[in-house]
Length: 351
Image 1 (cartoon, rainbow, N blue to C red):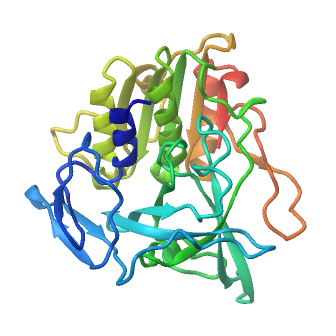
Image 2: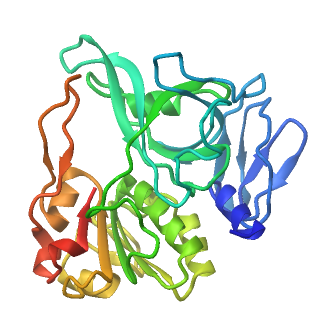
């Protein structure tokens, strides 16, 4: 894209109106102002106007890009900086190692990416085990030199704790991660030029991979329309809200966002969004209509297993891999709300 769009892609992680502190300057965050990645040498949490906060974790020595894979191991990515976006969620910016084969995370800057992060933890029975968890960056896949992750810090537990370990990473330290194979969606990993109308149904942190898809389409595909339905329990749980609003304002004729809250007695009398986990009326109001399987419409669903099952039916699993990890996902038949709404199986993809 042009320099202005590159700027917006690079610096969208910290919502407008927040402050960033570096060793040499304090910068007011403007969504369309290019600010280079700083070298972090101090630690600060700064209250922005209106009481918002942007917490940056900074090391006492410059972060290096030189962390690379051992000769037979997965690569290591150094943390440049991080921001706390909710009481239990962070955005973390990682640098590509110097010997990374591409200028950007994946081999194709137009195809969404996903990484598997490794962490030395314990199995559910308490035995030492290398744990793995997949994360889709929220930054555009064409971002050069870095990528951003949105991570929720769940309490550590046997068989889990990867997210907590990532969120506790200090600037300059590394995580071990491996780039996953491109996600095949009905035979292709491409999202550009495939559909005229795209629906995104996200539950909680399921927004991450769908936000990346939206970025790719809106930045480079002038014809496609994107409609996002974002379901959360409470209004304060809505992740990336400022960024979504910025994107909608930037693409008023192409990007539409609907929020729904599921918790009891949530959202005040001025709440203008939907309420509930989902129904046919919500689909009609917030997603593109079915197109009879003619290839012009696609609805992507991402969230917890139960959330995905409610909307499109459960996702199956193939046999476990030799290392004991989960088998490959299998789409299974289209069921749930999207089936009731008349969508064809070829018009829905479940993450």
